[in-house]
Amino acid sequence: QVQLVEFGGGLVEIGGSLKLSCAASGRTSDISVMDWFRQAPGKEREFVAGIGRAGGFTGYAVSVKGRFTISRDNANNNLYLQMDSLKPEDTAVYYCAAASGTTVYTDVESDMHYWGKGTLVTVSS
Image 1 (tube, one colour):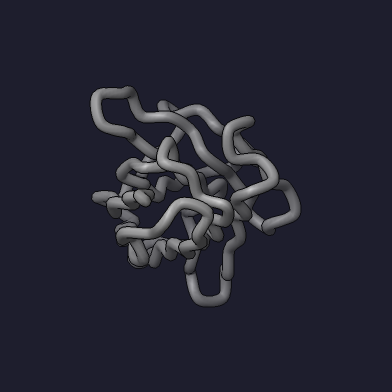
Image 2: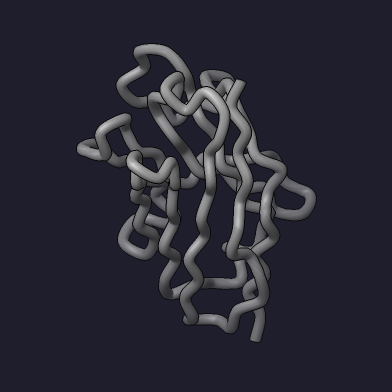
């Protein structure tokens, strides 16, 4: 089993920046792809960003491309999401997720095997 815990959420002003972290523990050798998803109030959960096992491939939702940067530190089992130029529509609970096995890359929610409990990001003036 793998456990995922997110850190770094909070209240930030429009146009500001925030960096989320996700710490993985347990059978971390099982982890291949790691993604960030988010769920805004009253909306379905959606893909935000994903990164392959070695970090060489990344993907982003259109809504965050150019503003958010995903990265991972496999030596310390951490996943990050640097969020810049934040907008009110970025307000959501952000979830760290991981797929196991040989998956090279995926941004599909149902492909994720492990989930964190989420961290709330609120963007407000």
